[in-house]
Amino acid sequence: MGYLILFLIIYLIFRHLAFLKKQEMQLVFISEYKFNVSIRKKLIGKYPHLSDGDVDKVFEALTDYFYICNQAYKSSVSMPSQIVDVA
Image (cartoon, rainbow, N blue to C red; front, top):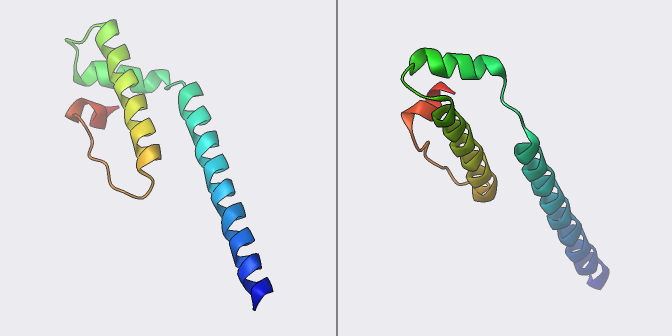
């Protein structure tokens, strides 16, 4: 019985470490991701009054949203703005 409990504890530790590694890899992916130019064009087509700086801010906010979603794990996170829905 003692070996079973020890095995279970070791299994849970390794599983948690695997989860942390996966989450870390996702954060690296998010930080290095470059949005496709077609998304930028679609955003400008929908909101032509936005400057290039404004569009950059939209993509920064979308990246922040992905970070928040990553940290929230299985909890739901609301989309912060309708403009991000377009992107």
